[in-house]
Length: 398
Image (tube, rainbow, N blue to C red; front, side, top):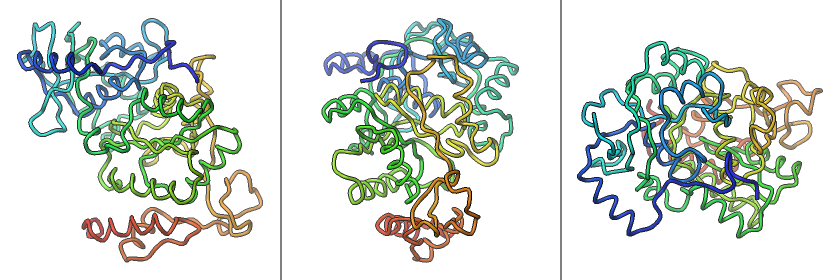
């Protein structure tokens, strides 16, 4: 199986020994503590699960600026975005050598991790601007990622962590949430060596399903990892539990047994387009995947990125920055001429009228009216789950 990023074996930071974890949890109650941001909590979960291998904790200001400027850690290893614990006020933990990080997303703010404090620094406005532009390519506060990144404060707490909890993800998504090391174990049991990953924050329509099938066949992989984001999204996105149900139903009915793993990871969406695609590639390699599907406007939002910027950024990487390779996908849709889903680049003789194309607004309108999209766009069983959600949740009234 492919090696993790930056090391020979995976380095998950979750404390797996039950007795030691219980002892540390008890110790944490007596430590100075701070409630972290949702972004930092997601970072801790990803560090705990081995997704951010080989990092040992949260970056310092200097490390973060090195990553922002050059996409390199101070030791020279490729890394695409800063992994930070940033707070508005660190006075509660000033002078402490060890602190408890409390979960903002669970009632009562239980301890999520223990952090050794190497430094408490403050980003300057110029540094925040440089990081924002590096990650998002814009400072526009209407960009949901920019707004979230610049709303958590400027005090950065760096140092290694020991993760004691996977937040709400393990409880709320018990069948779907998986760590990188658990995914590697599942792949090993299936005998998979060559695996293509599909990233999603949305339910999968027929075009997404066929895209996974195309990559699986073109690359001759052993399996497909459908890997969905389970953390916070922007307003209007489909909730994770609904998306999970849609994807599981599709896989159950339309893929052969033991060819697909349906899993999810605990992280908030950045909507950072090209830079987020690079981060997706890093942690899919840590999962054991050899390939990642990168499609049109991967991890994008609005019109902030070109349709294929998330693919071309991989051309800018130094050789051997990653072992994982990408599968470059174009927009996929049903061809009325060929009566199948195709990539648009493969059918230059087609016009727009030769495809079945529905906007997100049109699909939502149909679902709210109890009308399933055409079967050339969405599997009927998936459409039924989405119709039930829209008609029962009050989302249609917005």
